[in-house]
Image (tube, rainbow, N blue to C red):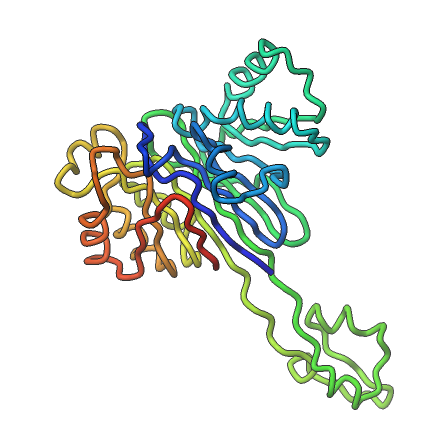
Length: 303
């Protein structure tokens, strides 16, 4: 099963020719999620061959324009292309009041339903789940209310040791209980331990997304030991005073968070347009946390 993150935009407030505003497309076990929707996101989806009609859920982290200015255009294009599937949008208080009037002024009676759910939580909260995954939110520290997101696979059932199962001539009706971890009692009273009947399943995977935020250790428990962490790194450490003043992070600070949380790999993004490249970001970050990558628009990362 796939768990992939495609970077649609890796820049900060001002788009450049090489970096568009923040947006990411997630495919987790054929559940399709868009995180943030900066200006030009739908163009990036076409450029990188992302089928945006598959998107089921949109998560907007906060109401700075580089994270949602592309949303009206995307929703409108979905309508014009004949979408019928319901769209679920999670975002800060006020997002619906910004989006619906623009769609109405544009004269569109959408041919599909949009459901908005407000995120206004001072603590971690479950947003959505089904049988395979769950989406949680946790607060960040920015100039305005901002949220991080945690996308997690649910624990997978154990794999059946088919050879031993057949050898014992067990009924097929016992398979669901065995996969849930239960032992089996034979007719003569013999107990067969579940570990003998199964192989361990692959561990559930986790992806954490931390958009605009200053260095804030409070988020560490929410992202502890995730397989992949995206954390903004708007500035290098030479501008750490600027980062603090604007409630953003440096590459070194993001790496410090990743190290403290013991994550598997760190993705850095949301780079200020003042930087021609990210060499200094990467140098700073890897001095603290080796497994770091500076993302580029169009790249896909698999967990």
